[in-house]
Image (cartoon, one colour):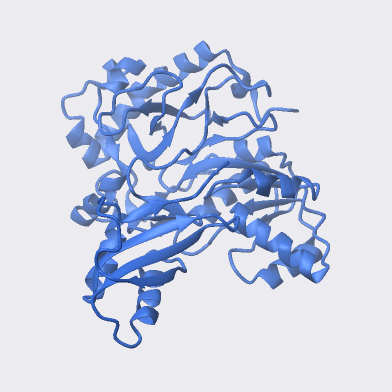
Length: 410
């Protein structure tokens, strides 16, 4: 069967009616059970929110605001509808931002994307997302279980052991970041190890570069990518047609002009805003900070939902590096921790085929051990390894940026 279920091939008008028939109940539920939404939607009659125009009139909640909201009203800033004691997991992503996970099966709705990528019941899946702090591995684990696949919880790091596990277990599929899959493949080539059992991969967390995808195809490994976040789960996913990403069936996506919340014209680049039907975390008009645009028409694969171009950068300076968000506030924390540093700027590029992070620090003096201490602080604050480059005052551009994304995607 080429599609996960009949929802994927519905008439678009039928899909739109179904989503907006459900929306008033979700708005009412959010108002009743989540204090934050009770406050910001106080004057809203849920019964009135039954089309896109009405939805677009509601206030936008920005992901970038969650850090302060959660500090003011721990643990979830009043946005969660399920009491803490009734959740399955609570995660802590960089920021820090906390995310709840309910007890439902596949609460992040990832089975659909896995199926589109070629995973089928019974396939052993090698899961190399992190099982530590953040929900990445669990987002996929729920979909893997829902699809009826066994899973090896590999996690990240220990490349040689990862290769050994693949040669022993012979998994059919991989989920993780594309850069780590390339590291595993390169290590297998170096060792002469046979990882040819891997035929299918679904990657996320960072861009899948065309050259990297081609190198996987030459190995007989089909790699597709999906767009998901720790707050919302699956947003959109590639299909074998590889023409944009198809939006998930259980959310409403708007592309809006950053800073306004106003929907843009089809094809215009804007910020991705999502409304979810998740009963545990009923996010209404949640602005991800990610940029994308709607593609015209429907996918050649037969799925009729709207397609977006995928991830096209950030609406703010928050940047995803090796699958982890890095926030301007973390750069400020680094400067505050080290008084010797006047200004700092993270520069990320992918010239080597994978994300490389360099932290440029303007310093008046260079006491012994400063660079090493900064390297440790960078890892402690961002949870990522990065190179530190000490520079003289006035070297960094005076443009207000503290995070520069110099990656190229073509």
